[in-house]
Length: 457
Image (cartoon, rainbow, N blue to C red; front, side, top):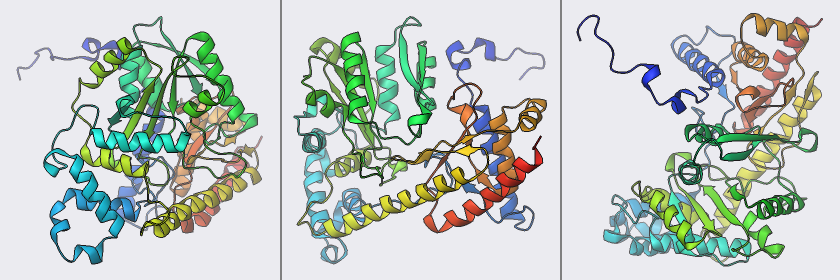
């Protein structure tokens, strides 16, 4: 390179919509410091005042996610990945009979019986049939393979629909706050206008609340009356920890109040990354598209066909999630035991963490009814806010960094996701292994009490 030669690219010559994206520097700052501390621990275990770094983050953000693989799912995947196992006599002793039968059925749907090839851009038709059957069984309403698009997780179809729906800044997207950056960033990248609305924290945990059917009906009616497309993120439909509520898909709710496909345009998203399965590395997901005209559906297909198909293993796993073992299958008892054990453990972890947060000065946290995250509120002392401002950082980021430095516990500042102005939060998950929760709680409690005392007026 010649000295003094102009660089080919500068920030000013990049797509301004990319530059306008929030860089999530607060989350990145905490995560980078956590990684640095992790490396210090590995090279010099005696250096920090703790023995490990605990990532209370989403599975895809955490270096050590909770192991949540299901034996039946993994058996079927193993047989599909290496079909020659089906020809070996030992296989019947190593794998359950229903896993063998399911793998044989699935391989019969895949051209060439190989997971290494491409499929139709919408996904393998037989797997879409299976997923449609699972949706129909769940909702009590018809579902069709032509409405299903198999995708690499739930993020890909969200981007796909944003790409389809957004024309320019005159198009607005109603989005709850706090919100996952997937939605807000996708809007900004495509030039839409974010139309935020704050969730009512007094009526529930903003990141772990199960919508009531009444609330869902109101949303459906709003979309119908205003001619809005409803994008329904339903990836945590299995994770419900209260007997007072249950999961109802928006498709089911719309049908229950007499609305057919012609009344509301609805796109539902699901993924294998979340739920009790937690297979975030498998990148399996789907979107179900209903209530669109045939002309618009052609445009949906056009956008989907811009990219190759989603990975075949993820497609298979998504079909298994929607059609798990049933009563009478060899794997049913162990499957239910694994599933119920994981969900019960998550519920106990959530209860222990919520109870602790609510016992501490200046903190409050609503009960987690579902999902995997908590969003506790922290009423920071004025002196702590002043100290944060002196460091040119958000007060909740200041709190999160101090927590990390003192305890090795990693949380994400609430300002990353959005919050009512003048309030401060952090987001954490209930994913650490249950046996680690008491120590995490103990370290957190000691830190918070010392922090509040240090900055007391």
